[in-house]
Image 1 (tube, protein in one colour):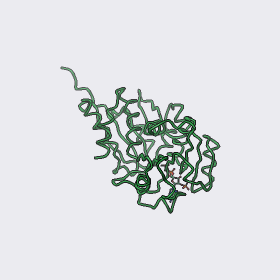
Image 2 (cartoon, helix red, strand yellow):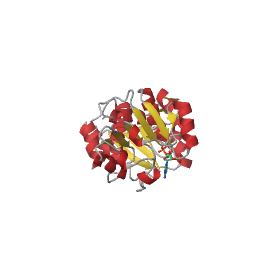
Image 3 (spheres, protein in one colour):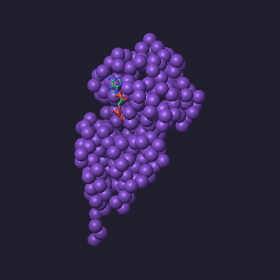
Image 4 (cartoon, protein in one colour):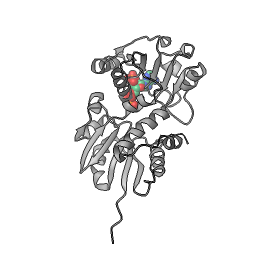
Length: 269
Ligand code: ATR
């Protein structure tokens, strides 16, 4: 009699984590490919003081990989035994893989962001708002693709440091009408904050030649996404970027082509 194969477990680690769309999205992908008997994906709430201990215990518990989200994307680098070049350069990781007890860290936020864009950004004038972990991944990706990147941050010193490390140039008072691509990587909008009072944006400055990306997502479209769409700009919301980064993580863990439509439908349900 052969033993039942152990379930290959996946998870997302964060705090708070209850709102995460990742379990629904990844379990839908597993079901779509008929893998849900052998694989599962769960949410694990863990705070900063327990993060390293939690990660170290995972290989023994049957985990093959994990996504890492706020506030652990920097700590994920420190815990890892090996890093991808991308994760090292960005200085943050959102994807861990466990192999014989070793922890490998990668960053799929940058690739997921690029995959969500409708067209090449080579030569495009881009404005990135924010200089946290998400901002670093976006600036890294845009600089690498040959965009001309301006970075604004509420705390100017942080955008200066980011640009010294990753490229792009800090801008203190951007003219939002002058950019073909505008990306909000700040947390403004997460709790209903008004983007037009907190960020250097005016709804009147949006227009049909622009693409506006908001990494913030919630149950409703954000005020930024609504205003940009109403002005005729192309709009990419945070769910689409979540789906694309999740798809890249899924491919790393399973080696299978991610079923994007099933993932998108589950993330939006
Ligand atoms: P993450 O890793 O998810 O990017 P983070 O490192 O906490 O998170 O970064 C949050 C970003 O949102 C920062 O750029 C932050 O600006 P500061 O560096 O000045 O703190 C930005 N942010 C948060 N609340 C903001 C607000 N009310 N107005 C403008 N920017 C804000």
